[in-house]
Image 1: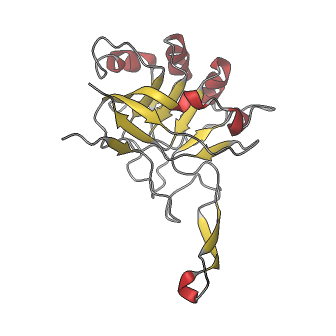
Image 2: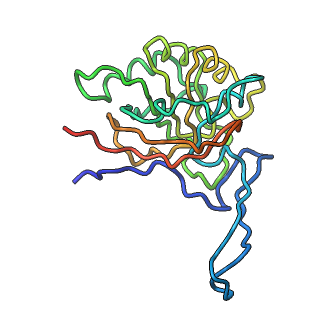
Image 3: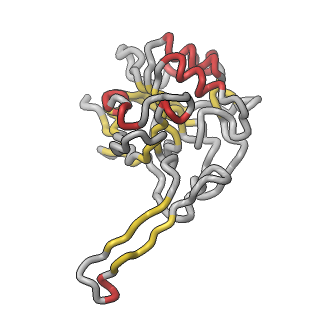
Length: 219
């Protein structure tokens, strides 16, 4: 029997890898039941680009909108999970997308507006892997032309780790799209699902972690 829900968020622990130089997750206890306190109370410190997360426009554009202004409809609704083969140069090009998107979805349903790309190039969220697969900016342009407004990926970024100009993010900005990064898709079969990945209402922030899940569509 197929699972009703797929949890596509990595566990958030202090072991979770973040971009080098970013703030790892840490927890400080203020009160603890184990110490005789009435309640347990703790605080956390971490980058907002933690695990599965949504980038706000302000992350890559001066004066861009904060995560609280990202339309929730972008992150709730029908999506397609697509498993991509390894690339020669580490970039997913439009031809590769075109040849896999329609083959791995529900026949006759058309292309959803939300696409989640499984590159299988970042296998362990607790171990930083620099050479993960990213998206060519031309692929962003192609997806936008096809009506896609949300792009998810199973890596820390849609751009290469060492990119200095972030061309894929710039393409997303040109088209007014939404980015969902840091997903765990290796155990999710290709196909169409309902995506639920709502960000926290962090006013003005440049991103938010999400508890991203996929729900089986009614057949």
